[in-house]
Length: 187
Image (cartoon, rainbow, N blue to C red; front, side, top):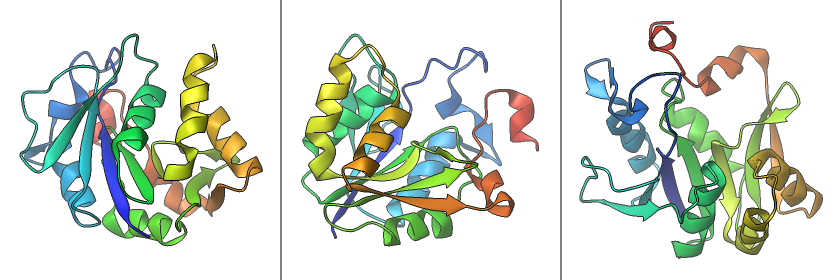
């Protein structure tokens, strides 16, 4: 299986009050930590955003949402369409507790034509998931609907046997936690 990765940084960060991607965490911006994790798994890296970012590194390709943005669905759809590999690993910039080892486990559950989604308490985590290239047309159709939930897309991919669900136990669920407030970075 060949792999690309996308760092999703397109959120509005309304609750945080500032761009989450540039927040300092342990001495570095969140985007830098997340790209380091993705680089450990592949050299084919995209950064998905609503508009250009000033910090884009030379080894990443910018993917800008087509207006109007439909949140992560827009970034995932555009990245799947641009990539030339079998699968796409998606990672949200606001999920700093994830580790390379956990991402690698998810990747190891995927294969060409079959993605892998971690499931925590019965709900898929779409922003730390591997999507197969074969799902591109399903994502394009999802953009045309009024429901832009990536959860719905994952359920559809699972039904079509294009996605494998990976149960995550309570002990590991904390690694998939996203941050929405500054205090979340301290816990």
